[in-house]
Image (cartoon, rainbow, N blue to C red; front, side):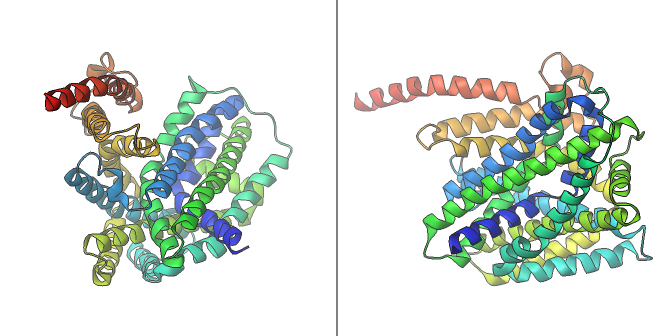
Amino acid sequence: MRFTKETAITSFALFSLFFGAGNLIIPPYLGYTAGNEWFLTSLGFALSAVIIPILGIFAHARLQGTLLDFGKKVHPIFSLVFCIIVYLIAVTLPGPRTASVTYEIGLQPYFDITSLTSSSIYFGLVLLFVLNRSKIIDVLGKYLTPLLLLILATIIGVAIFAELPTPKGSTNETALFTGIIEGYQTFDAIGAIVIGAILVVSLNLKNQESPEINKKVLYRAGIFAGIGLSLIYFGLIYVGALFSTFVETSSRTDLLSILSYETLGKGGRILLSVLISLACFTTAIGIVAGTADFVKGLFKGSQAAYLITAFSASILGIIIGQTGVAYIIGIAVPALNFIYPLVIVLIILNIFPPKMVSPFIFRTVAIATFLFSIPDFLISLNLLTLEAADDHLPFINYGISWVIPTLIIFVLAKIIEPLIFKKDSSETEN
């Protein structure tokens, strides 16, 4: 019974750590533009916003280590630099953005409060949760996530059972591919490798003598959280499609506000504020706790390192959070275009059985991914025009020009590897 309860709590905690403001804002508008092709679009969105992130959790369950283990087959120095970049991006961009979104959408319309005051209180509460490290899973799983799910289910349920007209025709060129690209923009793959590390540490703190049970809990929690995320995403996308027939807007946040008002009346917008605040808050806890765990590991389990990192990340969140959502998003795009492809590739490689992906494969594919993602990075910095690269790389206009070349390099590396190492072993014998 204890194992079943622990799996449920971990599943809820995992869901809330994944489900940030972007995960709430993107799906309804995606359904709004998808119209009657909402289901195919939902499948695409689930592929990149659910399956890849959950694979990241599975990789953590198999490795039972830290984020450093994701890149160690490439090289220890590469792994260290990769981790530092990921955590720096997390605490300087997505973390502060959660405070900005909470202020701009959840608090500013209703309260006469400054951004500085809001961010200070917000990260003060985040720090309180992070300092109570061993209780994070229980608090998120038992209290915050059920409330989050209750509000989401109410909005979706009321809209689905209301007498609304059927969705209009799609305005997207390719429904499935649009869903994949939009899911890619949630950046949940980065969330997966940060969140997975938190859950590994949290479960080990609770069950120090049961590593195999912890592994099973994490696998099952990943499956249940993935199902929950999929149901919510499909529901939000479908509701957005239903509203496409009588709502005219080009704003994601406005659509969400209209949706909550139309389903739950005047109180709907207040519930929306609570919903966005909860979604942002749980994500911020995961970012700060994950970064503090990582630095603590670098300093051989030093609790002082954990405390200093948690305080520093919270202070950074307060300072950077003053710049506003739009500014943070503008800076985040190039940074995420730089690191996100490597994150996805390392997740996929770590899912394979160790015998199938040698250090040679890891190094070759990682180098290829980095090189072929450079055009996307340069375009996001306006140092390269889309027209100049469009004829040379597939999917460059979607920001994923690295996918096909990396896949080809992976196949070639698998073909070449036996020939190279067979030759090396023959020379050694002679």
